[in-house]
Length: 448
Image 1 (cartoon, helix red, strand yellow):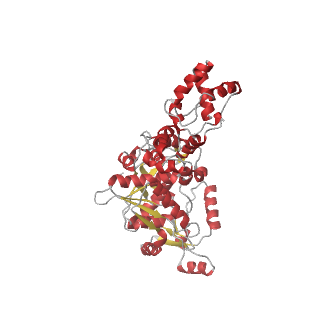
Image 2 (cartoon, rainbow, N blue to C red; image 1 turned 90 degrees about the horizontal axis):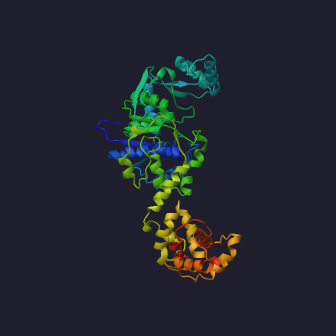
Image 3 (cartoon, rainbow, N blue to C red; image 1 turned 120 degrees about the horizontal axis):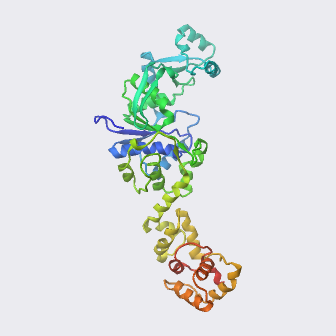
């Protein structure tokens, strides 16, 4: 995916602020961001908010918050709702060029046409009946209360481009309906507004989902009709579930803010999305510069890409375990861990968490002790052992000295000695080395 050196690289992420962005949206945003970052170019956040009913300011703000959480900082923000006058100018340009025509069919009439063509075994392509209307016909339609909408007249040739992921693409424009660009209520539609914006904003590269391939074909002709140069296009595969199932119905539960609430680390999400579906292995990267350096759109394939949110948690664990104490000091202080033991607490707890919220469990354990887990057959043994455990504070030798005394007093050894003691003190069979954990503990409930 390349461009001439005379055009500085400019990419854009153009979500509609009609809901929260999800992992599918992020893939598009990240690819465009990394292309701009790697080339020292410009990354535009463009809010496609011409749908006045569904677009909400709170969703626009949420999009910005989610991108900022990930570190995907934009160079500027554009809003299509601020550019309606520009779209009107472009519409006049297309009318003057004879490429824009007014139609009056109702949705019901169009549906009947589509069904008739399908029953005949033909593709449901608009028949261009409106091109035959005279001015008198159009005046009569308006007098009858019909509102006109506007279609772009495609040149019925082959539309071809070299796709950055899919390779050479060739679409017969005769197999595609002339796209509606302006609705009867005056709303400018995505295909038109995006084409005008991409020209005016100097967009050189566009990466988006494979479901936009037909849109790309029509937009290439629209851009050319307006005197612009089409960008370099690449269409990434669509995500499926872990078993290959359709993911679209689940995307609402895979919003970035939901993943964030589950404790997914931004570096984990970015590292997975920057490689998922490519020929390169997924590797945790701690910075966007590292991701950009190793990013190559040509390594991605066209096949549907399996996404499993659970894959984010091993990466999150690896990232969290590598964090320096300074990055979590405030969080640990908020848990009530005394300042003098906070750094030691992090050194021990960090290797036993997946998400940072897991620190709360270990803080509660060291501050308040744990509900003992004592098997009936071990009750007498634990009662005797607890009489040999001194009161806090404990130090690095307490565990070895205590277990030695218990072994001598009871004759137990190995797992039969250590596991019941661990479960009595911590309430669980696994966790940090007891020699490291016990010095942090302010209370052991099994002592009574």
